[in-house]
Length: 291
Image 1 (cartoon, rainbow, N blue to C red):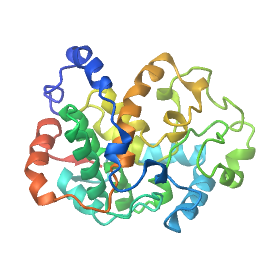
Image 2 (spheres, rainbow, N blue to C red; image 1 turned 30 degrees about the vertical axis):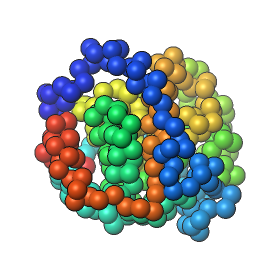
Image 3 (cartoon, rainbow, N blue to C red; image 1 turned 120 degrees about the vertical axis):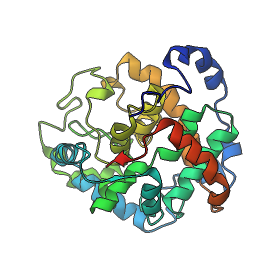
C-alpha cells in the first residue's frame, strides 16, 4: 500500500472536520430521486423473484464453520492480482440477486453512490469509499454463489436476531439448533466489540480486509458494516458492541443513505466521470489490488 494513503485527510486532522461532516447528514428524500424512501428495501413484495430465494439459501448455509473456512481461503488474497478497472469490468457483468431496489450492474450502482456523496461535498476518501464499497463482489469471479457474497450481513456464532430480513429461514441452518452457537452470546463475550465478531461471509468483510490500509477508520467501518442492517438500522446486537463501535456507528449511518437511496434506473455517464475517478483511485490505492 502507498505510504501516502492518508495524505488527503491526515489522521491527526480527523477531529477538525468530523463535527462539520456529521452536521451534514444527508437528506434521504433528496438522494432518493427514483422513488419514495419508503419504497426501498421492500422485502414483503420484492420487485424481483430472486430476492426471497437468495435469502433462503443465505440463511440456510451461512454457518459459523462455513464463514471460518471462507476467511481462511480468501483472506490470503492469493487468487488474482488486477487493477481496479479490470475488477470493475467484471462487476459490469453482475446484477445483485439480493437487492430489491435495482437491476443495474454494479459499477453503475457504485457510481450512483459515489456521485451522491460527491454532490454533498464530503471528503474525497468518502467518495472513494462509495466507489469501492461493493468491490468485494468480485468474489463471484472465483465461483462463489451470490448467497455467499451479497445481501445483508449478520453475526455467526451466536443467536440470530429476528431483526434480520427473512429471519424465519434460519430454522434450516444447522447452527440454529447447535447449543454452542444458538444462545444470546454464543462464542462471544458481552461487549467484546465487533472487531472480535465473525460476520456472515461476503463482500463487506472481503473489501474491508482488502482496503483497510488505504483508508481512514471511518471508511473502514463503512466498508465492513454497510450491509449489517440489523445493527445500524434496527439496533440489534447491542450487547456485542464496545464503546468504540457505538462511536463509529455514526459513520456507518452517514454512509448508508447514499448506498441505499442513490439507486436509480438512470445510469451515470461513465465516460464523462472516468478521468475524475482515475485520479481519485490513483491518489489512494496501489496500481493493482490483490484478490
